Structure formats: C-alpha cells, structure tokens
Length: 85
Figure 1 (cartoon, one colour):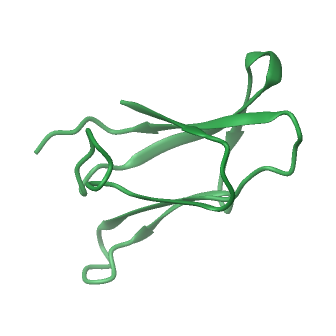
Figure 2 (cartoon, rainbow, N blue to C red):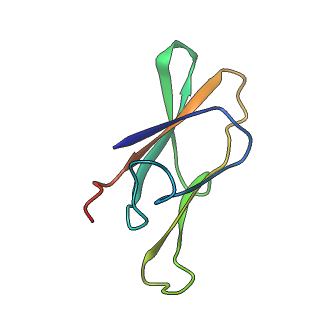
Figure 3 (cartoon, rainbow, N blue to C red):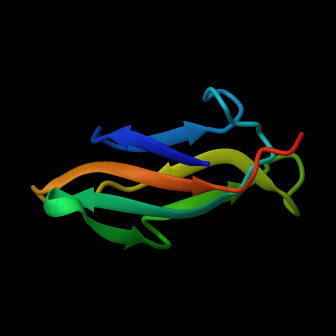
C-alpha cells in the first residue's frame, strides 16, 4: 500500500488512524515527489518510525517525515507493509 500526501509542514502520521492502515504496519520507504515526477528517497533522520513506547522491541504506529527544503517538492509518498490483521 502506498499513502500519498499533499505537501504540508512537519509530518507525523499515526498508522491505524489513517483509513486503510493498521497500527502494526511498518513504513518501508518514503519519497518526496518533485516536479517533473522526479522522486527523492527519504532516509534516516528525515524518515523514521520510532519504537513503541510500551514495548521497545516493536515499532510504534507513528511515522515521521521531515519536509525537504526544496521549492519543487509537490507531495510525499510512503510505502507501507501489507495490512495483515
């Protein structure tokens, strides 16, 4: 599943609260989509999914993106693991 977001300010997503997601999913990759349909892959520390506060051995449901400092960034895309309940 790929989530597409329009370009906002700072981005924090809570998996399980977005339609079509569940809290146990993992964010696999993220990109900033630029004009001309060019894609810039985001990596740590610009893209992260922190550990669950209750169980540090598991990933939490918060996905964080740091916006790119580029005028030609249009949106962000996040590739999520399959939503198996």
